[in-house]
Length: 430
Ligand code: LRH
Ligand code: MN
Ligand code: MN
Image (cartoon, rainbow, N blue to C red; front, side):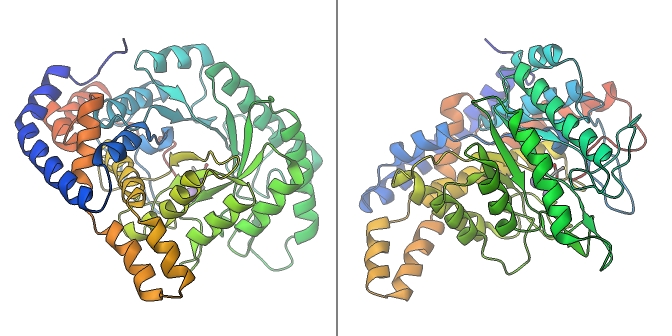
């Protein structure tokens, strides 16, 4: 039995006050879905099984290029972060794993494992960091890491990634995500081809250190901190990387890492078709490129991404098994509340995508009925699936209303008293 941080009695009481209304809402939605030939319980079953990982760095407060405004009761270290993740898991029952970032979360791996398993938490992909200099690091990444012109700096970056794999092995992780900030700020500063070649060679060394049952995710991002050119700038380059490296290499799509008009759902479709979709960092843009809560600006796009994922799931696309992770930065909200609601938003998009009448859609597509095709998607998207999500939480031991239960528990005030504010960073940048 894993421990609960929030009193189970309190959650039960909060649920009891909401249960009758939820049952009515669920029954009425069930009736309406039934008319569309959809069994509500089957959708709920799928939602119950759907999971998304919490990024350890997300539970701290983020910051901008200009300032960081610390929040009350911020986690002081990875062990506090694990406790915050346990709260998110307890109330949503949607986030059974944590994704660690090294060296921000560096600690004795056996202690980490023990701390997480107390709360029934596991570990998702490990993340390496060669986009900033760690304390006591010998060579700087100011001018790059895996693509650096200097072989010694590249070696150091490769070794760091291999160390992340070692830590992950003890934790039971099965993937390494590599995002580098390498690139250039001035035309002429870097030789594009040479830098990419050096990157590929370095990644090959990391790939060679991967256990047989692990995956390597490379993450593209169009800009920042290299504003003129970026080594892994888009999904095309990312696809080349995954192809060059081999069967265990896949592309990771961070929703925020694209230009505003880019059709991300089509990128997702392409990567699925060519068996190179590794997983996601869910978030939304408009605070920096990638720092807002999933679904907060463009929930329809999140739905369209899930429309592609469900299409692949239902058609049994070969090798289709993407990792779902959040990757956000929280500056004006309580990170725990934001992460709980983001996990729910991702589940919502999944549930809505499960409601798409795919047979009808195919017919409209084949007959070039653009209007009805798009309305078919809209009909699914417009369906308020909240009773399905809430019922899935109730059935699995979570809270019908996670934010209400969290606030009633007074968790933030309690940890604010226990965790004195620290000046500077919590490693919570994205
Ligand atoms: C880069 C990124 C990448 C990093 C994380 C902190 O913007 O999305 O995934 O590891 O933020
Ligand atoms: Mn990311
Ligand atoms: Mn990002």
